[in-house]
Amino acid sequence: MRSTAIADMRPVLLTTLLALAGSIQGAQAAPQNLPVPGGVAVVPLNAPKGQAPKARLGDAPVAVIQERGRWLALVGIPLDTPAGELPLTVESGGNTGFVPISVRDKTYPVQRLTVRNPRHVNPNPDDEVRIARETSVLTQAKRHFSAAAPQTDFQLPAQGRLSSRFGLRRFFNGEPRNPHNGLDVAVGTGTPIHAPAAGTVLNTGNYFFTGNTVFLDHGQGLITAYMHLSRIDVREGDRIAQGQQLGAAGATGRVTGPHLHWAVFLNGTAVEPEAFLAPKR
Ligand SMILES: [Zn+2]
Image 1 (cartoon, helix red, strand yellow):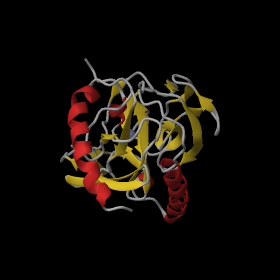
Image 2 (image 1 turned 90 degrees about the vertical axis):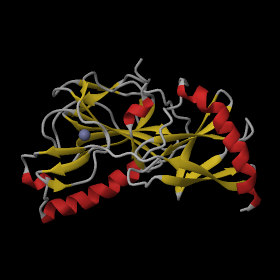
Image 3 (image 1 turned 30 degrees about the horizontal axis):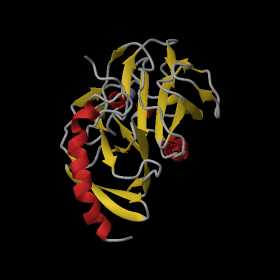
């Protein structure tokens, strides 16, 4: 690691950031730049056209896409990140440096839910064994990183009201639990669920909390998941086109009623799915 790289990269990157600030807003392919906990930072990287730079957040590899000849790192910012500077490690042309991401504060609203099955709030010892086993499978799926360049202009996977937004600080039957790590679409059992973008089926299964679940790998650590399904229509390894049916909505796992829970992961962390949808006009 050359220490000069840090000093070298910073001014160039700041200039690039300023120059691109306007154009990123209206970009077709890249997600919206929203450097907040649970958001996505879109970070221009200064590297030659033909030589993809590599980026990491801690130990996790970060997506780097090419858009109109520019390299952009798509950094998923974990929900528990405090406001301040988050260092992104960038390797380019044999140099390693750190690019600071200025993370702004964001406080998500509280949501209180009543779940009928008490085991979904306080699992019994057998459930705990199952949950531990499943957590390792689910964590592996979320952290999967493949080389393919991801399609990042998503379509909503089901047509319905956006009922529970990403990031809500949740209480189940009055007890604090993990924040809401996806976007809920209010659709009835049997409603078709479509792939928001091209990808490969990474994992399917029936899990304690998420019920019937499909994970799609879009490439470069961009992973999406579809939970509580009544039916799964795809198999691990299937190549999926944008808009292809993955299954049907349902109420399996920990739910208060039928809906789609749609989760999006970047560098192993859950991020705001709406960042990948075209902004409303
Ligand atoms: Zn949900």
